[in-house]
Image 1 (cartoon, rainbow over the protein chains, first blue to last red):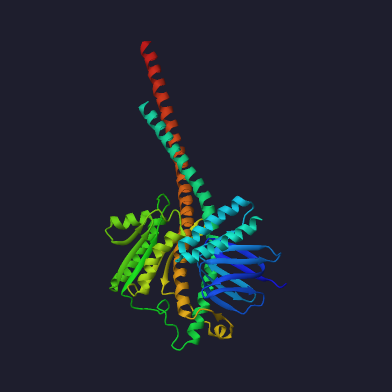
Image 2 (image 1 turned 120 degrees about the vertical axis):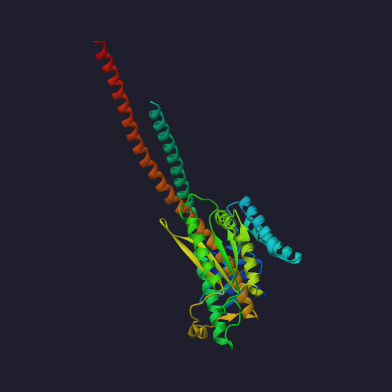
Length: 131
Length: 295
């Protein structure tokens, strides 16, 4: 399967940089997925979860609070303010990342429904990592 | 003999100072390495953000009738009110590091005062804040304990006020003054105009050729949101850069201080030896003359 390059940058440095087969981002006007060969696009992101399917089929989730995404020439650049990747070597690492991600979302989201939906997504992502 | 003791005391005191300055230098070296690393990682984000902003701005400028309307891009040659934001260190003992920034702020202030511009000064860093308070310059905002430990959230909150006032038309330009890191032995003073944003040249050819699709309905809204983040980020970067520069300046200052102390110990030791010889000679003369008088 064709791949595209994903780069997630925060003011404190890059938190993801590598080849992926698919990435789903929470756009301002709705969630959308990007596959290889996607048309050039620039848009704002709202607080939510970026779902990544890596080259080797592994999944990864990154929680963001705001951002801009630029898709061009099979490269996806995501500029975010604050981001937490749900990953870790063991369960306690993942649990720590989960807590951090939740507090990030709570600090920006303005509606309870949104916090709840994002929290549910984060938890399911964390759960799939643990098993 | 009293003189000898006195010199000995001085030597001890100077070499104690030397120990302190050497330790401070080592600490700064370690901290510098960390700050430098952070600044380096952060620079990538700046590059990409500038790239995206330039691209969207060119697109609006070239494709829209009347060009770009956003207040963030319209150049204003006769501002009525400006914000000057400065960043200094919280601590001293770093040579001319803080003073350089303060002087630059003063220069900028006189420059605009002559034109009759209303100036609002907002400061970060204990040293600068103390200086301006002492000299009875009114500060709109004074933040301490932020420049020694940069924090994205706090710096964003600080910057948000200027951005809001700029968008509301209260302020016409926002300047940022800080002393940045160039390399281990040099600091570079930055006087940047954050708002309105300067874009050197709009690349119309590239803009019309690109197949860039903007999802948002309102391009300018997107741009404004991006500009706000850009300004906030620049503020944060200024803090990171300033910390790195502060440590490099302190490293240098402490290195010089250690060397000076070394010199001083050397000259004091010579003085001590001379005084010791002198006292021995005097004693000998006393004994000999005593023996002579007994004959």
